[in-house]
Image (cartoon, rainbow, N blue to C red; front, top):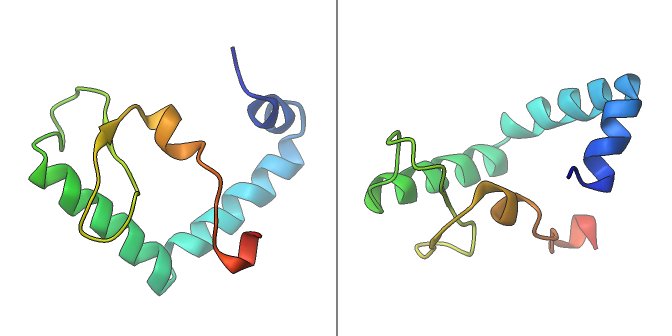
Length: 84
């Protein structure tokens, strides 16, 4: 069962295209790069990088984390001032 957000973007391809464009832009920023590399580093440290177990390194904070399903990891509410 897909979430409301997933259903929205499935029904609105123009909005989905804008979202993907914005996300690609964000991933190139220093903050986006830092988050992505930290998650990869943690994945390697926890031994799950590239082994196909379907787990993500959770973005719980710097130098700490845990393994959890990608859907649980990525649905967590953003908490920075920008999104508050």
